[in-house]
Length: 382
Image (tube, rainbow, N blue to C red):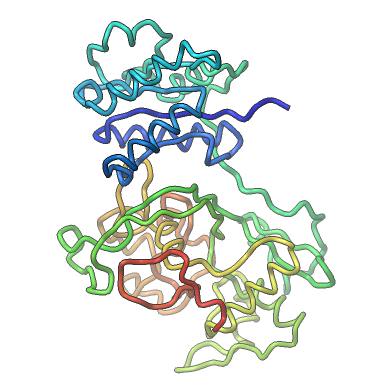
């Protein structure tokens, strides 16, 4: 079998707007392997000898060295030293493939021009330049545009079910119904959220409505994960109730009864579900699909809801920093009741997750504690 591709990306952190777009596209092109490309997006490793030892180890271990060129990169002592190290290793027995990437007009060092350079300078389209980079990396027949991750769903045949259990609209949104391990299960469409750091919490200087328990804003790092595109629907939860004889959700505060939810509202988010109910449903779904499903952590939910990796910013709302009642179901939109899944595609987050603002409250699997956030702290049903 061929050796896995391993790439080190040298850059100035002033160029993160480009790097956080390029690196996820490279990882997808390399089969979705997050470890294939090493990129320090936050600068969080900076910290003296320990940080530099990590840099040296990664450059030494990875046979491909990408150098993002810009005026800021040429002014960075770190970038210059990283290139010098890679240049020396090029003459080692194992060799080193060096590819300079011209991101902004600048004057590279003469020894940097010895290598095949790929230009991303405008007006060249990004997609065209990306295809040229893949070819420079040795991929024959490289695609003209970067591929996008599509999380795999269980390879199971579609199960026949009447509309009163599986409405056609859910099928149009990408849901599938199957009979797995003795139970009828509805499989939701999933979004892919790549590994890496993100800014968690709210900045009161940017968001005037930032609450105290959302501060201070800080960096958190997560492994890759999948998130359902939409909140759990009545149809999905009804499968769980039928299969387990679990007590139906109880109506409180004049909310919808279970009979009302299952009568003509199967494509709406389920309501009146407790945290224990949500946890039990996630565990049941994981058991029947043989997939590692669970409730998301607080950090996972927030990253999926508003982190924009292409710009390296945390949005106030999933769609941007300005509230828009036409992009969500809140009191301002005057719906007065839940809306079906997929009603606000223009309110989706950068990772295409919908209804992360409005419609229903959503449970996570994390304990409620002040920051700094510890990503490994889950409730685990206790």
